[in-house]
Structures are given as C-alpha cells and as structure tokens.
Length: 343
Figure 1 (spheres, rainbow, N blue to C red):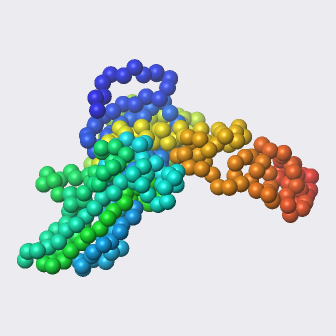
Figure 2: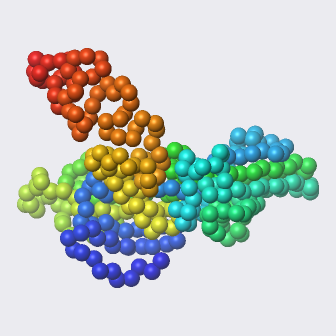
Figure 3: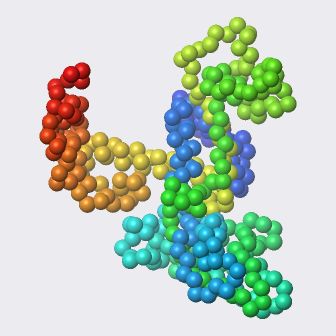
C-alpha cells in the first residue's frame, strides 16, 4: 500500500507510519486519549473477523495422529481473509449448517505410496468453488519453498482424506481467528507520568533509558527523562502519543487489520447509541453484537426484556417495582423498599 503524504487535521487523530512491511507495521497514533488507543489495540487483537477452519469431516485417517489432533492443526492454519465482508456469519445465514455464502470448503487427500516418510503441507489443501470471492479461504503460504505449515506425516500405506469447512469468526471466540501474532503498545517511553516502576540497580535513567537498552520510542519524545532538571511533576498530564508495532499472521495486511479494527469499534459504538436511544429497529445491518447478528427473543426493546422483567432501566419507567416486591433501582428507591441510600 502506498503511504504518501496525507492531509491531516492537527487537532484530530494523526498517524505517523515509521515502518511498513507485508506482515508488519510500526506506526504512531497521536492526538487521541489512552482509552481510545487501548480500545483500538484490544479490538484488533480479539474482534477483527477472519476466516479459519471450523468443521472437519474425516473420511479416512490411518496416520498416527488422532482425528481431533489433525483437526486442531488444520484450524490453526491461517487462511486469506481479504474482503471478509463478502462472507456472512453462520448465525446470520439462512442455511442449516454451512453454504457458499457463509463458508469456504477445502479438501485434503494424501496417501503415501513410497518407502520414504511423506509430509502433508498446507499447500495440499484445495479450495472448492463456489466461494464468496476469489481470495477468501486460500491457505497462507509464506516460505520460499511454497509448502506452508506441516499438517502431518505419513508412512507407506497411510492415508488422510478430509473435508474442511472454513467459517468467519473472531479471536474472542477462538484464537484460530486471531488476525495478529502480537501488537506492541507503548506510551510515555521516558516514564514521565510514573505509570510504571522500572527495575534498576543504581540509576534508572542510565540503566532504563540511556544504558545498554536504549528505548527506540524514546527518541520520538522531546521531553527529557531526567526529572532532576528542576521540572515539576505535572499531575494533570495525560499521554497523547502511542506507539504501535503490529504483526499480522498473514491472513490480513497490517493496514487492513487497523481499518477493520476501527470499523468494528464504530459498529459497537453505534449499537450502544441505539440502545441508549431506545430504537426498536435493531435487526438491520448492525445487531447487538455489532456484526449484524440478531438478538434473542424478548430482547427487542428497552421495555420488552421479557414478561417478568424483575427490574427496569433508567431509560424506561425509572423507579418501577421489581417482581420480588419492595422498591426498585436506585433511580427510584433502594432495592429493599426504603426511600434513600442511608437507611
């Protein structure tokens, strides 16, 4: 991706890309608060959707590995997730279990006929058509030999024949859907805010900041790390510059991971605003989970949480009584029927 000169607003979020590779991006996010930066980090780690093998139908397996063992290894093979928006979540699809709209089918058939031990690689996974687009579901192979990860080994006469169903999911459900191997996150490299207690033997300035392990991110900070210069400690200071080092596992490019993370955050915030506004039309593009999933029965409105509510929200009839008798929430009275907190 071409990272040219972009027009940026000095008062809004600003991104500085220090290094960019096909599977890694090192960038700085400025003019945002700590809550936003950390929310973006957590979203990219756990809630960016990708493709991974979720179902394995074993037709033949005479190898020394159990069916469950091979199925687990297949699930951890990264699959191309480009334009993942074209794939539906299984819970949102009208099919019974899986179809070409919510899944990608891969087949694996290998049999050893020679005397030498045969290795089965990720390249032996064959994608079946049709599928949502031409990229999604392809095994990610990055080694120079073009083999991919080793799935199993076979001796003469042994055979594996399996049908794999890849589905869309997020790492919060299972780690196999994780789009990143790791995300480095740091702010205040000189520790001027005193959020960290660095281990040191004699002098923390020399050992932690200027000694054998100089901090790369510290060179981007203008402030001095030496608090003995006479500069008073600012108790109201907050971080505004955050250093990210994102490493993708290959199923999505690093810039796509960031963009998808921002998109997921927008969807989740939109769902919160819908709840607060009391909008009953919530079965459209953005559902309760932020990905278009429908809600369970009896959860379609602020006042319709079920026949026996038991409590009420402050946005719908505050102060109503619960089904257990007594008072209601602190917006009316205490849960025990009193009219105040200190009784």
